[in-house]
Length: 267
Length: 267
DNA sequence: CGGCGCCTTGAGAGTAATCAACGATAGTGG
DNA sequence: CCACTATCGTTGATTACTCTCAAGGCGCCG
Image (cartoon, rainbow over all chains, first blue to last red; front, side, top):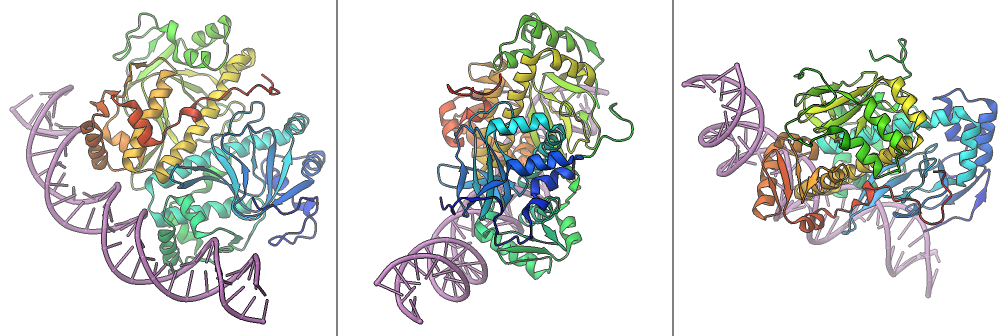
């Protein structure tokens, strides 16, 4: 609900002070890891998201039941998809990180079965549906990269089911931290095992299917064991391998492996 | 691992004794609810899945890490997507019901991040990748219906995250039963609130993130309250509305709501 | 008939939730 | 400028939901 005044193009933000936004548009950065974008692909993406708007923390971007026409690109900050029970309890379904988009699936829009909201302050570009589909049609490599990216999102949802269904509280949290370091690294937001994570403990609780009190205790334990440092703003993985072991984390699901040597046949 | 001898075309099975398979190919049936298939669409789907094979319960159809070339269509029985921990604990990620498919996403295949296996005996058609893409190209309404169907699958995954993250054991089970009645009804497999559900209690446990012992107790409770009847083969919803209330179930996520009056999506 | 898989039930343990209170921090308004 | 309020983090005590372990029963198949 708290909206900063709309700001167009180059905006300076609290957690990002690169000299020039255009050189590291997070979506461009992500897609460059997935497809060989041409210079015009990059230019088109930058142009289309040149105007963006800031939202305060815990603001709704899309409400449940809404029919979504436009495409949203998160440029900075962390947003989420979530659902709520009648009791008010809410479950976060997915994190939407810089370079991630949310919108109706390209050619068919339908009613949202969940809401999308910011967790931290976010810089968000909104792209009219038509402009977006036009871009995809003219830039097949972008479309290709986005499909790979979507597959990774689906795999992430599966991994979250796994996480909630059969890991302990500590394991879940370790898994989340490991996942985020990989996803954020793909958009250049990790510096030596440390990344901005402007979430409250309640946010984490709603992500991991735990109570905020228990999140606090698990976090305390991870800190005392020297595994992570976390102050509500930034998370540092102090013993990354230990966390990976605890969580049984494998980053495979996040990177669409290119089809191997023997192409196309089942192997 | 237990494979019945390959059987082509019309196979009689224990839980389905319709006179003629072709009249209710479950995928055709499902898609007819999503798109206006033409007669040739239907014929193409029937032709392409005319040869199918039986698998015994708890057989692997696709292994994790495999590169999947072909498309699988479940014609009868219940299969699942699942993942396993090193401890052996397994989490079922999704149910694959008659009329559902599993395969790599159409144009790009990649390594499976999860496995697919049967839960009950299943009749499965395997379609070579090339034939499948050819069919989609020549039958756009089929492709359209499948996209809607895929959106519903994604929404289902989100709902499962919700289920595991913030519902109690009883609520989860009620929710699952409510979901299945809607999904199975879409392929004509529900008779007056009753449907075949050939699952063990351990299968349910691995679905709901519970222990088999606790599943047994929850089931007992639901039975004693007269809400459901279940014998390991078939489930009957005796007080459907009560179950819906318990689970806070809404079927919205399962049916892609057609874009409202103000159209604009390409169809 | 014996073994095996699955269901059932009891007992005890443990993980995580709830309830409650206090401290710290930050933004607000007088 | 500082009390004032709200939000968030922290901790303790208690409750409870669910798990694990264990044993017995039932039905099916070789």
